[in-house]
Image 1 (cartoon, rainbow over the protein chains, first blue to last red):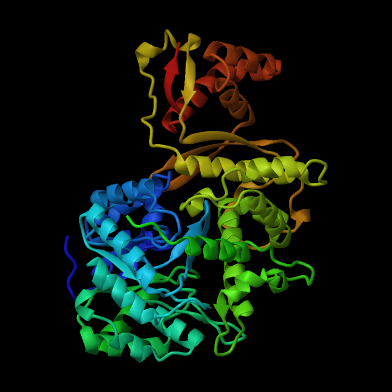
Image 2 (tube, each protein chain N blue to C red):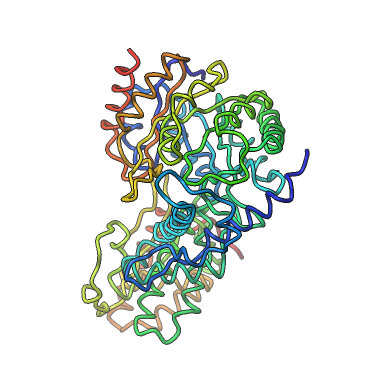
Amino acid sequence: MTIARDALGVGLRPSLHAYVVEHRPDVGYLEVISESLMGPSPLPRERLERVRAHYPVVLHGVGLNLLGHAPLDEDYLDALCRLADAVDAPFVTDHLCWTGAHGVSHHDLLPVPYVPELVEVAAERAAYVQRRLGRPFGVENLSSYVELRRSTMTEWEFYAAVVREAGCWALLDVNNVYVSSVNHGFDPEQYLDAVDFSRVLQVHLAGHTREPDGTLVDTHDHPVADDVWSLYRRAWRMGGPFPTMLEWDDRIPPMPELLAQLDRARAVRA
Amino acid sequence: MKPAPEWLGELQARFGEVLRTPLDRSTGTLAAATSSYAPEALGDVVDGPATSGRDRLAVYNRQYWFRLFRALATAFPITARVVGPWDFNEHASRFLLARPPRGWDLERVPDGFDAFLERSLEGHADGDLILEAARLDATWRRLTRAPTTRPFRPDASAAATMPDARLTPSEATAVVVERWPLMGLARSSTRIDRSELPRLPQPRFWALAREATGIRRWALEPREGELLLLLQRYRVRDALARLEASCTAEERAALPAKVERWLAHGAERGLWSGVRG
């Protein structure tokens, strides 16, 4: 199944399954967390089978560890390739980050210093992943809470260079751009200006939380913030259409509330 | 492929140490112990517009722990409710310090938590209760991961050989004994007071089976539960003999009809995947 260039999708989480099966909501595609289908439990795969005939399903990973010090985990990649084939995913995405090192996985999306030396490493690995998958592979920009002293490039320069040199795709998370811009004090519009929208495979939208000290944390547990909608509108005008996906991972409301967010996305880009 | 530079490995080692720094419990809340961060790790980061590099690292430090606490509490929901969040997170911290996550699969992080509790709760006043909760959670987890198996449905021709056969329990099913009213706790996350968990006057038995929509459970009659547990260890004939030996005369009289019904229910519920011998 293919995804319309202007499709609106939602992240399919376990609490939403029953609604999707029963009501078949009008969404253009579904995104599932790759690792939720790669574990030993057959239940998530069985559940997905009940909706897969009705929607294109794309895979979004959190465990590739693209920029870990160790080489890519070939067993993980084998499992990811099998899964992508099994669900006939139009594309697969993961993050431009590291998640573990020295044998320990931190189950978090962690930033690296933005330096040309790591552009080379990330690009070579991302290109390899895309070849292995045999389908488009997109890397997502992070939301981050810390900047590393060793960086010599901006995040957007680093991100654009990796996508360009890898020949892969960008999963542009507009909420992440906004969260990082507040946390690090840069102009989010300057970030968007550096994006090559011809390489944008998908855009993510999500909610965030403001900590008492002003730090924004990418919690995916709120509606999309007004400032993020504004940034989305700008991105759409600059480079739309592109498939857009709403992520909601914690304190997930009933599906109609998610669908209302998609309606807002339609209104914002009209 | 070109290897990542050595300095990246060193930086990630320092960053990882910060993430795994245990949270401070001394103030009655779980707070990042930022004074414990190594100076070299602090040297890797720059201050932000509004917060110091140290405080920025603390965001990741807290996220690491709370994400894992949540993974453990999700995997062991009954245990979490019985113990309460504060103590549960303390058990979880010690478990995670002893066994930091090793792979990409967050759902595997709680593997072995029940065995860890068994070792660490020796002599604990509520140890038996907590361990029963942990065993129930572990059983639930095992079932969710079990492969789908074709249930064994004996036909009339099997009747002659059945007494000498051993029934093979399906991997996707379990028979559990409940000595405290724990089974219903997994469905809610509200706090539970220890006084709401009196020991049951008689143990209760449950059959659990993973089905397409999740895990289904059936309350069993006590003797039915005993029989199903005996059938996991003995041939049908021996299991029945042992059950009969433990029954009163009155129970014995009604046993043949009941056993027939219980075995039929067991087969309907897919409790067995085959027979041996």
